[in-house]
Length: 522
Ligand code: NAP
Image 1 (tube, rainbow, N blue to C red):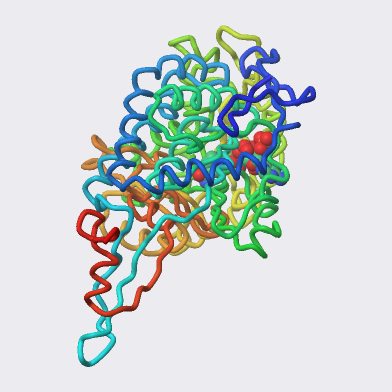
Image 2: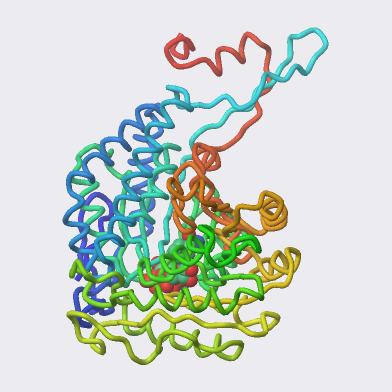
């Protein structure tokens, strides 16, 4: 039974909880429950102890905590890799999750020292003169709130997900309570144990609640924030919670999206861009068995090249080795659970109403080193939508190794098809033609949080379609949730309260000066 870390100690819940299965063997690996955990007390404890201690530290001191946590995790990452195999992650998948998360901590730590003051208050914008005689002025200030951040995470990034939310919150002086998704909560438990073992966090700065999160929002108020990652359906439910609607709990959501990748008309078979497009599509379908919120779900290609794209993609998919994620020759592990595989199969059945399956069998996979039925294995599945005007490929998310190829006739058609996803986290256009790239980026930008333009020049250094980066926006409009995580210090600032302070220049200077010179105790 997974324990929760609340009010300063590890607590075992009551009851039997729900079973968590090993993705590879189907055996029960843990159980999770939140029964009997005193959530209101934990929230109060976090605000009182963690909030006060973090609030007293300067931004640079908080950055020091992040750096220490990142370095400690780096020394212990091997055991997180090993544990990730139970969730179906190959070593490469585990590195994306674990090293990616550590990278966020270290990146935020170094940027905070460069970009934020060694103080507890940020002066935001210029001094605004308000009177003719110069004796009445104003300044916006950003200060920490006496609240707490509740993270509700998706199952697919049990390490990176909590860390990418922790970094900005901690810099903003806010304590955090992590609610991991149940299917991979055992990994987040080990992560939290390690973060606590690092021995640098003030008491109450970090708590963990395993098991169901139902009712968690009931106890939050206007100084608190909920940072949600998961499906659009759960996000809708939480956004309508009375705490959000009436008490104005700040709510941010990162949800699913039907990300697209567009092949330029110049990128005909035989060009480097054509090969880059195919390689990227297959990488996005198979990394983490397609369980990535940024994965390419829709491949938009010039109608004339549909056949070549399908053949080249099939040839690459044929080289994918599905099997036990701990086997180094395996390139794609199982999905997180058999229940989740059932969900993907039923989404694929919906997609097939609009298209035909051209690679893979949803009901059979050749599996290396494991039992295909006991584990949650699924072959990569490629579909072709001959009629891209049908709704399914633009609306149904199959959260697995699944992608649909569809044809476009001209650039405006490609932009309109992309927009039918109603808002995405990441899009890409693979072309060496500046005019095409310009039209696509300008057309797609209002619908996307991040757009990659990929050509032969950028290919060697490109971080890829699906990789969120700490310094860039991660989030997207509309269906993607409307949130904006990461993106450098802007994500710290949005946790802070912005207040306009009006005063005489003399008093304003005393109010806003760093502590050493403010004379606050005089
Ligand atoms: P999910 O079923 O929506 O669950 C997400 C989280 O919400 C879990 O921690 C879940 O807890 C919790 N939850 C569910 N109902 C709740 C309630 N009433 N109150 C409080 N918490 C509640 O999503 P998932 O299956 O874990 O993740 C897959 C989805 O996440 C996909 O659709 C994917 O596209 C999306 N995703 C998006 C991003 C992004 O950055 N935009 C990243 C990763 C994944 P339990 O597990 O205990 O039910």
